[in-house]
Image (cartoon, rainbow over all chains, first blue to last red; front, side, top):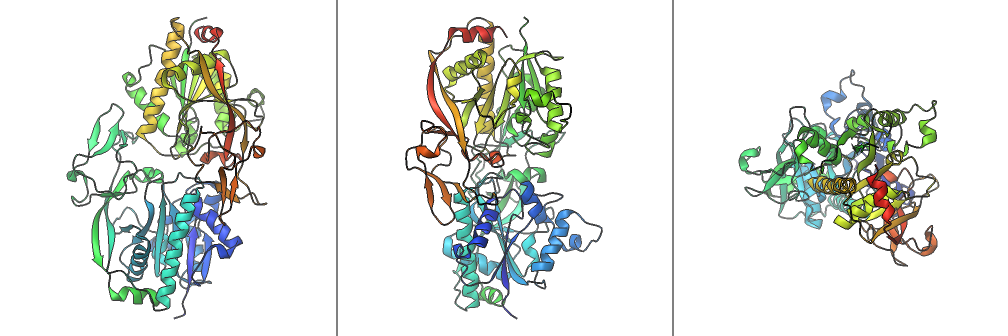
Length: 306
Length: 306
C-alpha cells in the first residue's frame, strides 16, 4: 500500500480561528510548516461556518461523521453534505487519498496543548504515545459515550484531534497558534519516523479515559441554576477531591464534588471544564479515569503501514 | 420631574451570557440585587440574539441607536426594530419611563471591572466618578469616533456601560457575574445617594479618553497578516512604551509600538485589546490618553434631577 497523505483539517468548527489562520500561512509559505517530508493535504473543515464565524451552520460537523448519518440520503444538512464531500475528496478511497487525519481544534477550557483519541485503534495510540513521549502532552481518550459520536477522524484509518486552550471563540492568539503548530509538527515527525522504520515509543502512555459528563444544575425551564465554581475553573486534568467545589449558585450556595455525583467513582479527572460550546450539549465538564498503558509493539507497525 | 426608573439591560449582545444569567436570578429572587431602593426595569436587550447565542442577528444592537437610523423608516433590520421598541417601552418618554440606563456587557479583553462613558454629560460623569470613588474602577471615555456611534445608553438622559472581562463569548463565569453585580450595585447606590441629596464625589476622576484604534496588519484579501503579540495580550489599561511588541507575524517578526503608529502620540493607554467581536470592526485595540479631571459640583445636581 502506498503511503498516503496526511490530511490536516482546520476550522471544523468555524469559530475556532487559530488553526485556519495557521493553515492560511502554511499555504502561502509552506516552509513555515516543517512537515518532516510527509505529503500533506491542508483543508478548511467547514468553510461556511468559518465565513460566518460560527461553530456550525446546521449541525456540529464534528458530530456528523457517523456512518448511519452519512449513508442516509434524507439527511441533507449543510454539515452532512460537507462531511460527505470531505470523504470523497480526502477519504482513504477519495480523489486525493489520505490515510491519516489530524483535526485542529481549540477550546475555552484550559486543556493546554493536548490530544484527543477516539477509541483504541493501534495506529492512533502509536501516534499519541509518540507525541506524548516527545512533548508530554496529556491524552483524552474518548470512547463509549452514546451521546457523543460521529467524530471526523474516526472515518480515516488513523487520526487524532489536537486540542488547545484556553482561548475564546473567535479570537486569534499567537500562543494558541504556536502550541497548535508544535503539536502538529510532533505528529508529522512521528508519522515520518514510523514510515522510516525508526519510531521508538516510550514504555507506556498515560491516558485520561472518558467515563461521562456532568451538566450544570438547571431550572425546570432548562436555564442554568448554578455555574461552574471559580475554584474549578481552569483546573482541567487535575483530580477532584471529595468536597471540592463544583458549582456555584447565585445565592452563594456551593455544590461540592462527591464520587456519588460522578458516572464512575474513580473518574476524578475533569476535562473540558466550562467549554463554551458544550453548554448546548448539556456538558459542564467531562470526567475521566487516569490510566497508564504499556505501549505495544504492534502499534508502530499499524502506523507504519498507513 | 418624578424620579424615573433605572433601566438595566443585559444581553444587548446575545453571546455575552453572564449579565442575562444574573438578570434571570434577580427576576426570580429580587432580594439577590440590593438595589438601594431605586425602582428598576430589568430587560434583555436582544432576545433573538440571546436565543441564538450570537452577538446580533442583522446588525450590532449597540451601534443601532443613532437618531438618523432610528428615524429612517426604510431601515427595518431586527436590531433597529428592537432599538425602537426599547425606546418606546423604556425611553424617557416611554410607557415605563426610565431616566437612567445601565447596559451590562462583557468582553474577551482583560478590561477587569470597568465603566464606559459616552461623551461628557454631567450626570454620566457624576455616576462614573461616584463608582470610581467607591470601587476604583477604570473609566473608558468614548467620544469623537465617527466609525463607532449609536450606543444604547446615549438615548437615555444618563447612562453608562459596565464592561467586565476577560471572558469568552458564550461562557458563564461566576467571577464575571459577581464583578458585574458589584459594579451595578455601586451604580444604583450612587443614583440613590444623588436622589437623597447625599452623594459626595471624589475630588477628581481619572478617565482614559478614546483617541482612535489600531487594526491588525492585513493581507490584500483582508485576512490578518499578524496577530496581537502575546506580551500585549491582557495588558489593557497599562501604558505602551516605545519599542514594546504590538503584533506578531507567523514567521516570527514583531511589529513594535512607536508613537507614530498611534492616532495621537500621547495615546499610550490600550483598551479592548483583542476583543473577539471587534475583528470584524477592524479594531485590534483602542488607544487612549489618560487624564485626571476635577469633579464639578454641577454633576451631582444633574444626576439628582433625573
